[in-house]
Length: 139
Image: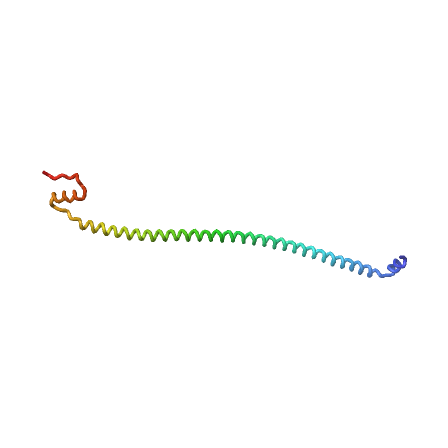
């Protein structure tokens, strides 16, 4: 031990300064490496958390979109049924309009073919033939 101390006493002062600078340099590199490793780990953890959040948001959006697709499909089916009902009603209405136009034509023909007699006795006989009995002949 005394030989080591004696040997160290023989070294020049700049060697000690260099040794201190070397120790500080190594310390700085090691602490910088540790700090950068710590920052890298923190950034990696944040990235993992962000990825987890992104995946969760994506899954939530997929579920929402699937529900919306199901709702829209049901709404489309409902609207198609309503369209079929409306089309059927339109066809039924067109048939009814045609039937009523035909009936109007028949009634107009009957109206135009009505002949009213000028003779009151013949008029009373025609009314009795139609079932109206309350009419009396004038004396």
